[in-house]
Length: 268
Ligand SMILES: C[S@@+](CC[C@H](N)C(=O)[O-])C[C@H]1O[C@@H](n2cnc3c(N)ncnc32)[C@H](O)[C@@H]1O
Image (cartoon, rainbow, N blue to C red):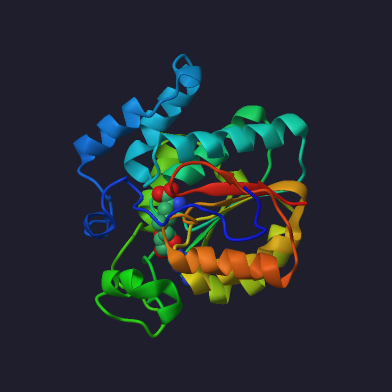
C-alpha cells in the first residue's frame, strides 16, 4: 500500500478481539488465549527458525505484540545489520521492554555495537485529546485534555524493562540507553545525542505522542532506513498523526502491512 490516498487498514483491536473488549485490559487478551493465538500465527517459513522461537518465548511476557510484529521487528533489525545500515535502533513506547529486547538482541548478536535508544515515560500513557477519538477517551476514563500525566494504562516500569534486557536476555548495558520522561520533554534534548537512525519504531498509541516523535526523529532516519508504526491500524490518533505528517511534508512512501495493526515503510 502507498500513502497516496488513505490506506485501507480497518481500525481493529490489537489481539484480534472486538475493540471494546480489547481495551478492557492492558494485555488485550487472557494470557492463555494470547499464547495459543501466538503459536498458531507462526508462519510455515518460520517453523524451524528456532532462534526466533527461543527469543520470542523469553520476551513474550514483556510485549503486547503478537508473532507477526515481533518477527517483523526482528527481520528489519537483521536487515539493517546485513545491509550495514548506519545509525541507532530507536523505540518510542517501550512498555515492558520485550520488543526493545528483540531489537537489541539482533544488534548484539550481529556484533555491530550499535546504540539502542529506548524512550518512554515508564509511567504509562498520558491523557489523550479529542484527536485520539472517542475510544481512546473512553479508555482514559473520559479524560481528554492531553495533559502529560499518566492515566494508569500501559504502565511498564524502568525496573521491569531493565530486568528483561539485562537479566532475562543478558544484553550489554553499554549499548542501551533508557531515556525516561514524556517525549514532548525528552526528545528535543535527546535527538542530538541519538544522531542518525537506521530503524525507528513508534509504538506510542496517541496522536500527540506519535506526532512529536516524527517531528523530532524522522529527519534523522537515514535514507532507506526503516520506520515501523505499531498502532497504525489500531488507534485513529496514531494513524492521523502519521498521515498528516507524511502529507504535510509531501513524503510518498510504500507502506507494508505487518498484521491488522502494524505497518512499516522505508524512508525514501
Ligand atoms: C502500547 S505501549 C508500547 C508497547 C511495547 N512497544 C510493546 O511492544 O509491548 C505504549 C507506550 O507508550 C508510552 N507513551 C505513550 N505516549 C508517551 C509520551 N508522550 N511520552 C512518553 N511515553 C509515552 C507509554 O508509557 C507506553 O509504555
